Length: 95
Image (cartoon, rainbow, N blue to C red; front, side, top):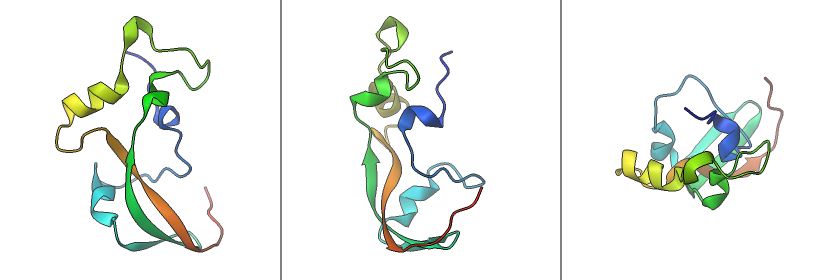
């Protein structure tokens, strides 16, 4: 397989220890992450940029299309992965 990691999707924040697709239930809610409060405003539509290796900028071999693969393998989710959030109150995030 190809080295498809979270970096491919260009996230600002990655949370571990949550169930797959859990973020879908957060839309319209406010979450506390570290010292910040985030309002979850919508799902993130994945664009063609994920079809490029984030380290080299080159297209995936053999014309691999991750947007289509996501939509086909997860039809209930479609081409969405992750959520957009608005900062309600800032604070520190720690690793």
